[in-house]
Length: 355
Image 1 (cartoon, rainbow, N blue to C red):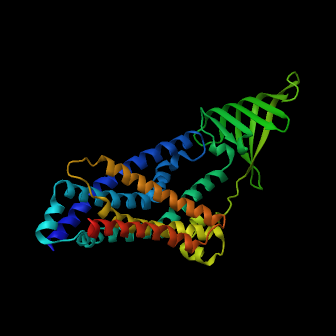
Image 2: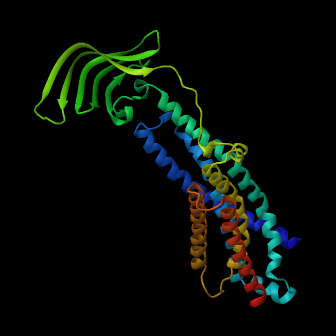
Image 3: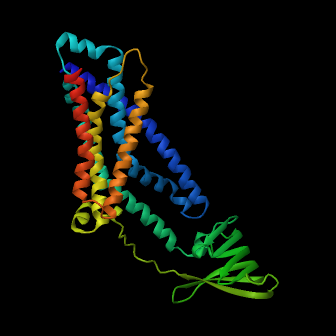
């Protein structure tokens, strides 16, 4: 009993440290990526931290699974190097199989947590990310423009630059706009402008005191310059579209089970693989932790990370094959995780009965 309790505490302490390091690295990389998209006008700058939180939820199943694997591996490797396990073998006749109970006692709550996050929380987080991005895309072009930046709209066919925007967003100053229209390009330069809306909800930018330059891509010498007092640009309607997500990655597990499509089945396998992977990796770490006390632990840890990467790639390949209907989704789920279980069993046989 004392043996099990001490091991569980040591596993939990190691897992907390490993998860903290991994989570910090992933959050930092995600924050840099999201800040880059916000600087490019692809997402709302006010939603950076919200999107970062949702993105963190989507990475939790992989991070928790790897944390369990590395934590069990580090504790077991330390026991081998300190000759604790050989002492247990020689004095009490304890087998390596006796380590399965404390490892599962530590890992099972985290495995259940991985399953809940993978099946329920991750789809919700992806849905929130998609919802936030779609709501930002539905906003009209003027509301997306920030002063002092070049912003692409209309799929990159229109580029705006505004030097100054009033606090209420109703007027702008020193406006530059470039728009590609077929074989021609329109460049507009205006000293000021304002935003107007019609009774039907149509939105216009009314530019004042400027020039319009019409150029042809086929003939560089063809230029036409027009001076104007007012120039109106239609930027769409203000009516909000209802958000409806049809992506299987954002669907609940119940809806996925009702769908009879290859994409839905691939998503089911992706979600179910993570708790199974966490379980397999926790058990695999026990026989894999064997190290010579005279040797270092670096090579074993590097190989452990490579095993996790291989497992991750296996899940991705299985998902891809199910999408293309190359394999049955049940066969892929059982085959991938069953193979790792068989390898773990063979390693136990080697360490317990053959050595």
